[in-house]
Length: 288
Image (cartoon, rainbow, N blue to C red; front, side, top):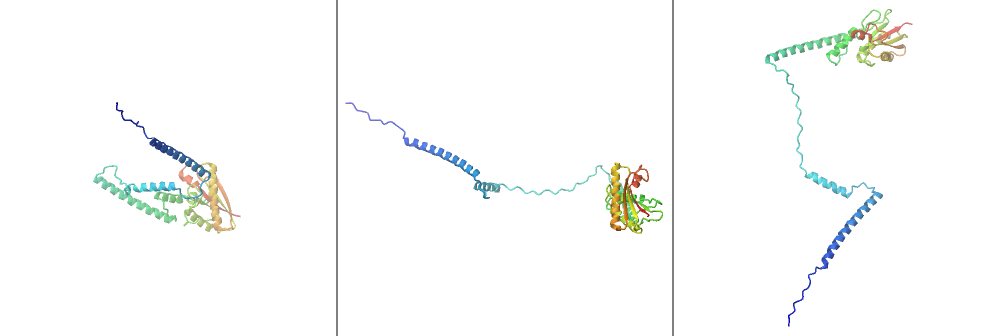
């Protein structure tokens, strides 16, 4: 009688594990789809019905908080003070011996002494001419003195009207006074200088002796520049002088303003000095 072998059961895998994996995958996909749909729906609602509140969104608050934490953890920068700029040291371009240096220092002292003498002599001239002390350099001050010494010249007897200390005098034979435009006005303008106002004030004291008279104020230029521009410039300068007279003399006087430009020079415009003489204002009293 033969002996039968024991029954062998097949090694089959349990279906429960597969179902669990499939369930997890399905739920993950469902979560992703639902999240995407919710995001799209939220964006659509936000665009359709935007919020009117000014409060910062929570996401922005969180982002700013993270940034502040990160910035606090950064290493502080080393504070380095800006170095103070040292003045530039001027070094001689030529090597000098001790004897040469001493000789140049002596020459420099002599030049400084001469300069001080020139400044003192210039101040003396300014005091004699009654010129207001200028803040300009020595060359500019000497130029003003030169202009006042060269001009003006009265038309009748060639008397110089130099400054406020020497008042222009009208007489039966001399009823016109010539004034230098370069002293009366700022350079290339019709603005009266402070020195010019002093000269005009002295002239006003003389003009007041001739009430009810007609006073003509005529402007003249040199021949530099365009003819039309010179004519307009001469008229504007004469007009400023007449306005100054009228303002300080009252209504008893009649003023006539004329701008001749370069048409009536008193000398040829062939040098700097002559052109300076031609730039002038003539004030004339007309008898009845």
